[in-house]
Length: 237
Image (cartoon, rainbow, N blue to C red; front, top):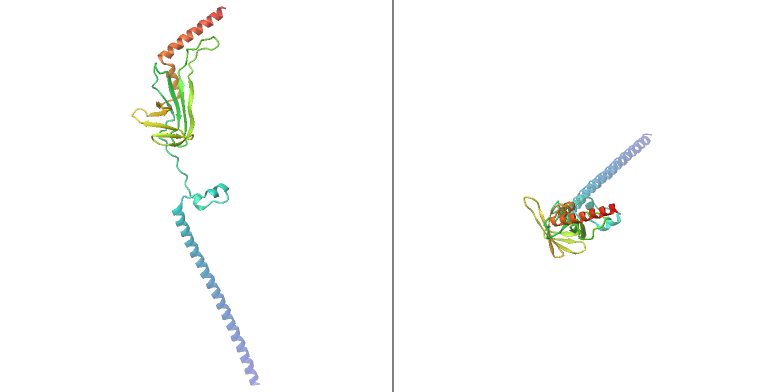
């Protein structure tokens, strides 16, 4: 009987020890898995930091660099593209855009009117303007007016510009000289071999100047007097 109890007791002890051993083994196994996961997470974070630093270094070395193909297709945009700063607009050589010639005289009844944005991709228009012509036959159908007639010599955009020349988008080159002074800047252009001196001003100022020339005013008076005479004759008839 005693022997039977001893055997039962030993059996119970063996079962308990086996259970304890299995429990310890399971806990140790779980701890090992947790440790491995922790190691993997730490390694992944370290790799992300290293990759991020490498990417930043590459971007700093290459920025700005535009992927033209990606921009055209619109399928994706790189980080370098998104960080590109817009190129600041080029400062013009002069902020004045309207220029006219003021060297007309009784012997020179014409001038030049210019719209000129002195900056790359700016616009360039120059016109050759003549004083009102009263030499034609006067009629009663049209009163002699003081309208100047202008012929456009150039109307183009600027391909490139420097302090000595303007290159138009049609390939033509216009030599320039921009001089400053205490009064006002002076712009000189060479158009069709002719040097044109310009000062800040608008076309209506040029028109007034040409119409105010002594010879032009006298021709206008003669034409207007003849017009009034024709009107008087028509009224009498």
